[in-house]
Amino acid sequence: MIRRHRVTLLSFPLVIVAAIAVSACVDEPGSFVVRADSAGVEIVQNTREDYALRWRFEERARVSDSLPADPSILGPGHVGADSMGRLYVLDPTRQRIAVFDSAGSFLRAIGGRGGLADGLDTPVSMTVRPGGVVEVFDMGLARLLEFTLEGEVVGQRPLATGEWGWRVRSALDGFVGVRRHDSVRTSDSGLSVRRLVSVMGPDTLELARVRWETATFTLPACGLTATAEPLFSPRLAWDAAARLVVVAAEVEYVVNWFGGAGQTRSIRRPLLPRLTSDSIAAEELGDGPSVVTPTGPCGGNPSDEVRQRGYAPRLPAVSGVLLEQDSTLWVVRGHFRSEDPAVDVFTSGGVYLGTLPAGAPLPVGFSPAGDVLAVERGPDDTAELVRYAVDRRR
Image 1 (cartoon, helix red, strand yellow):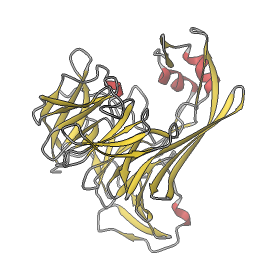
Image 2 (image 1 turned 60 degrees about the vertical axis):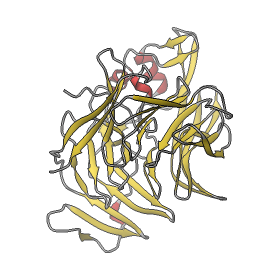
Image 3 (image 1 turned 135 degrees about the vertical axis):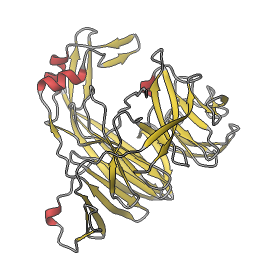
Image 4 (image 1 turned 30 degrees about the vertical axis):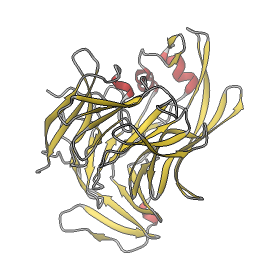
């Protein structure tokens, strides 16, 4: 039986097609795809109802040792694989990248405590290239670093301190990441803006943005206040390959594609976002801590927090996107905490292939050969990284 750990990935956009007045045509008989063009952007409407893929997943390697103890800190941007089948795991708690062979046995560690001269400070995300070069975004060092398999630093790109979010990576002849801006309006409200941007030399192109009205709420149990956006607010869900960036940033089911010259495609499915409520919002918070302080976790009454913090009226239809090396797109649908998310798969041309079968592993990354990487919970509730080969015959 596959043991799954739900990793939250987040959000997307709607562009209403009624205003598109250009050549629309059926992609091919029975394909349930309608394509149109809007100012040079291909609009791909996938009208097919949910179709359960008959794909099979075969476990090829399982890593149980030398991983962070908490599975929740591992997700997209924390795991990877190279063309030789080696597996890589970013461990922020030990400030290192653990490398494993194709069978899952530990090989070596890259980085470690030490700062720029011989290690890492605050690594928050990584990308593994097919040849084994590991690119790491270190927030503490404010740099995008490149390491060889032997741990040698062979490249670095300085970034503005405090300006970038948790994930930055090379793409589109430059790099892509999320810039953040927070401002305070009153003692109990503020504004947060997150912008996904592509930086190529002196040029910066905004690909998407989200904007939240934040609220300050109290946690009487520990005498603290916290600031956060309303629950279920849209977030930036994005991924990138060398020549492609995909992003979802609004409430409806829309994923936009960008190449070096700007937006090239917009993929859509007619799935309506679900409504939320007071009780759903309180259940989403659960009994866990709202914040973690230097002295430990701190929580409060979920209903009180919902009342102070608020929530968006609809659950975003997309919570995450992932790209394979060949530009196959995997879309994780929006889901509540108690649910297993549905995962849709699209071709590199934007055509909906189907939805993963029940019980399939939830991907957090891929190997260059197309194997799925998943983070699961082991017998002792600790993290395990599993590599699955995928039989994609439908």
